[in-house]
Amino acid sequence: MATRTLLATLAPACEAATGAALTIESVGGVDAARRVANGEDFDLVLLAHDALDRLEAAGHLLAGSQVALVRSGVSVAVRAGQAHPDLSTESAVREAVLAAASVGHSTGPSGVQLLALFDRWGIREALAGRLVQAPAGVPVAALVARGEVALGFQQLSELIGQPGIEIVGPLPEPIRIDTVFAGAIGVRSPRADQARQALAFLASPATAEAKQAQGMEAF
Image 1 (spheres, rainbow, N blue to C red):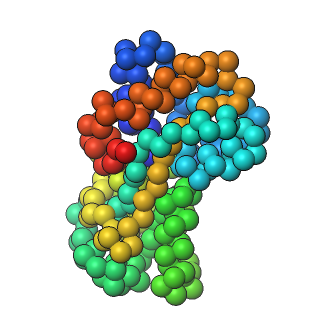
Image 2: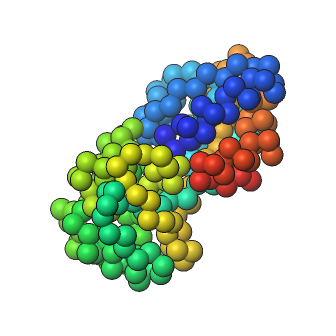
């Protein structure tokens, strides 16, 4: 879902540049990986690189076809009109988390890394009953906007432009949480050559501006 808006923006440009029509279905990463693992055929699969590694190892993706597309960082959001916590240092973020009435995170790789951070801080137990995992395909921003979550952590691209929230900012460098999103070719794709052309375009310098507009970094 973190790449949904970006890919919707780039699909027409991809067709114009390569002649290959790119039709994208955006679902939660957990659902996408499960569908591929269950044998559903796709020409391209666009997911976090570690999820693609697992799918390739299981024989669902063409070996060696993975191409890194963007690096996406986690930011923090609060409901519109609420006070912005200090995120300038690791200790400040830790205190903000401990002070929050509830903390929202995703089902995706950024959520997994966030919980690992809480474990490293030794505060997971103290947060029992206050951690809210957004259902697959549901943005954390929606929970924040409805007041169901006081402090929301998610990919910046999934927070940008969402109503009812204010983006406080990214996590400081020592605890920055990044996800590399990549693309790979389905092992049974009958359009592997076109898929390679599409991946080459999605990774090209021509897409850098669109990626930056979505809060992502191009490679």
